[in-house]
Image (cartoon, rainbow, N blue to C red; front, side):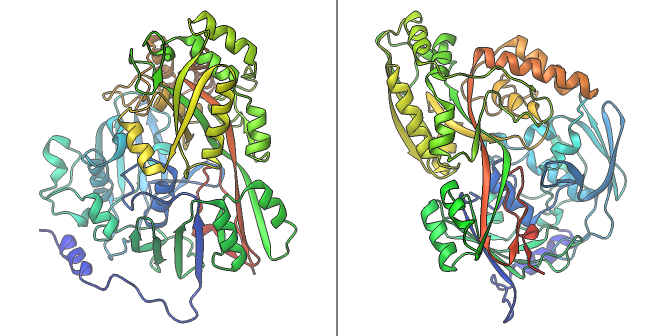
Length: 538
């Protein structure tokens, strides 16, 4: 058992709650959607990723506008199409006092590949792409990819680095067949949720994570970067907008996520509060079950799955008035979507063909497909994950009912929804996705491309749509270093996806934060609420 592990086990017997001195600066944040784990590799979703950034760092980081900037790596360089060299930051220490070096990075890569509790293989596609990882010295990392990958720095900004001290090990090497030198058990979800293995280099340290009750953190005074203003941070899950607003008004919270646009407009008139609004990268979309001949939540006269027919999928799109959803449900704090990423992102179509509202044409297409009287359907959605998600699902159901698709909504908490969706239990589901890196390639690779574990594609393609021609284009785009050519290929792939519509974009969220006077927060395109970026008034 190595010395670093012994040091960690010694820390584990200390009291779980770290006292905060009288008069310490504390910040209370009401979250619209709570993280489902303190394990940063458990599930690649925004609430979890945001919490991860409190406690851990990655090799690269992203700024408020989603540009990759140095993190635990102070610099990086593409030596050739398949080789990247990262220079690690010196002098960085984990919260248990251990120095950060290349062994921690390789251990983290290996743990990502040995995490059976993760949802849908979160983050494994990034590591699967590595042919080898070498360490010329303790602060230099050389990554060779199996194919050209221009997005390596952006992808590595997503992988939170753990300390290798949390497991017994010998010499750490990127040898997956030999467990990379790890001689004990891999850290579990429970160990990270309890704080036992939650050792990072980030701006805060975990004190307590209790699902449904919140997260308590204290400042990491040994943090290598800019020190946060807050000694203590409380992240409190408040899924309903009304109680979040009431808590802000009552002084129970200092900052809240996602007040309704209507409430935000009222708060602007109150000198005791401030508002920040920022367009996000998140598209709200529908995903069809296409692969199965019979789908569990569709009832048709012929017993078949109607979503296998492109005409039916297009009819669903034509039945939905996106402008009404944006105006009446989202109070204009959103934008209608005719593609899967905003036009400002890399590889997006500058002028996509609009996805119009045409219920008459929708009925015609349903009749052509053999469903002149429609069919019965259950639409599954979350009711606590995205802005007004339950209301949006109900509005979509009403639109579908008007063209003859008798639609009921089953909206549920996000933890249940994501688990069921990953098991492919739904016929039509409403989801959301923020493209955290890679511009247009992110959604297309994850949700549209054929599920292929070896290539790391289609991890979220729960509908089973598959088109070899599309796969060829998106694969070529993801391996193209030249940015102009890659952008052209991504636009081509997007047009192919929008022609067949295995997924239907609905709208792009804008994110709103409200906070008490005396604070400032610039907001982030990725919708993360990060306490380290909340500043007190000078």
